Length: 140
Image (cartoon, rainbow, N blue to C red):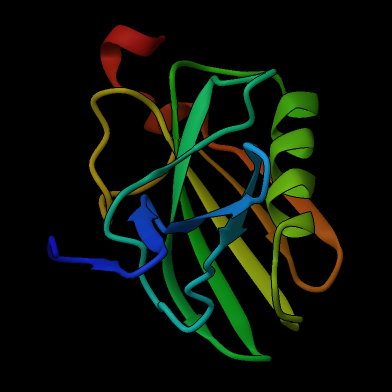
């Protein structure tokens, strides 16, 4: 048996695929998602929704019930309205409740922990700030 496989269950990218054969050649396939809700940091950025894939994100730090910090990697500058949409989308994906959610946005060429082009903070209400002076020279 291969690593990360168990009888009747093949682990595929954080999910579990279960296949059952029911007499007479009928096949039922059931996919069960497995969530890692305790992970304080996602090592790999998560893709945005399929409809609007102009960003990826990762969780930078969280204190359960208190605060959650996210880093968003944008493909380029976006409007204030788009920042609002991204912030609300990420907030809606929270599996726990937090008093505050802090989101920083980086443009191509920007590095983590060296400033941000924009921020959207739920403290507790949403506040959006665009810090255009932080944009790399090729993004102005």
